[in-house]
Image (cartoon, rainbow, N blue to C red):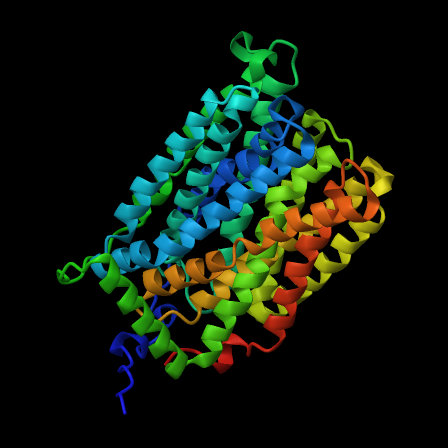
Length: 451
């Protein structure tokens, strides 16, 4: 009989937040500026501007471009699943989490600016989708390192509000950059520096602004966050890295099986939340008839609502626990998503109120998920567990884009309509509902801390 692998000793230590010293509001604000600074990739590029631009008729018919976007999103997710364990573990072993985060942030800024080359022609469809996919991978890996620094700015008593503050800062930063590019380049016939909509120049120049925004506004975070070097660890190959990750998973399953259950449940509902972001603006234009400018105005309003709601729910997170926040948010999103599908013929009059209501619950679910895991991370294991967090999420990250594309095809088969984009809503709802069901069986964080 084979001997089961030993539980890694550093999985049984005290939670990092239990030993975290009190911090200052100034440091929390600087930490939150990373969310603010990197938000253009999520808000402007992935959700409200570039994703809408890349599925425009100039690149091909609506169903083909939307399906191509879904495919590229799914492929990016699979690459994250493959890379996150190795890169997250490397940061954890070396203690150079912040150094890695800095480089990844600079690369993300460069990729954002590189979208300037994507002209509104069919030949540039996969160029744009390729850069977008690589950027998604870099953004996700950087997020692993960023999340693992939360113990530098929060304690067990404040992690909910700190996590919510970070997400809220991201949403509010998204408002500013959306309004900036809209009024400076997109809305005027002739914008700042003589930019017009000819050849998609207004959108393309906006991508340069996004890159510069990320480069500048993430500086405060790097002034207050610091590496925590460890004793020099021996270098390991890719195969050995995956073996070590597997050893940690097995050890975590033995020490705290409910933590593993949370990682799996959160993988499902986080993929559904990502689907809301990835395809929300696409639906706004292709199904509900909003113009590109209307989508940006909606995005600004949505970010105001989401930012304030996420900060408010962060306070509830600390008082009521993150599980309750997650379940309430997911339940509401499922109900609203079904409502949007049923009422899709109502156009903008339906999308505006229901879309804004949906943004109330997306951010709180994300922030509470991060704070849930942060409460469980043993000291010195932030990179590895948040790496597993990213990996489990991305292992199933093809589900939401695939479900979205599948339901579009199903809608076309059932209705015979040329544009059945709105059926994709049901694919997103299905993933969110699965995450809700899985989360019901996860015990509250107080009941299964790794210890």
